[in-house]
Image (cartoon, rainbow, N blue to C red):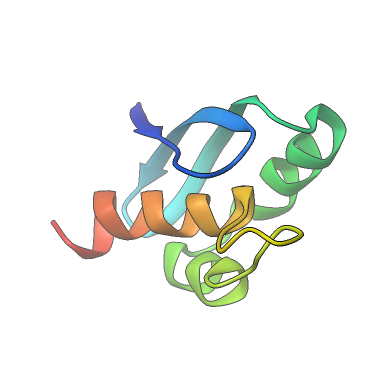
Amino acid sequence: MNNFDTKGVCAKNIEFEVDGDIVKSVKFNGGCNGNLKGIASLVEGLKVEDVIKKLEGLTCGAKDTSCPDQLAKALKQAVINK
């Protein structure tokens, strides 16, 4: 299980598991509970690369980032930038 401390968003951190190039599980701690459960459910089973492409760069309100963007950063840090 990987743990990523988020920056600039309501969620405090993201716990996630990757098996090879597939996202197995995602859990956001804090933030908009229902929306983040939905995002987690939607990305589970997808390729890491595809999740990053879909979520990277998304913003939340006036913030430069968002919880989905933070998930993309977490996946990049854990998998792509090994």
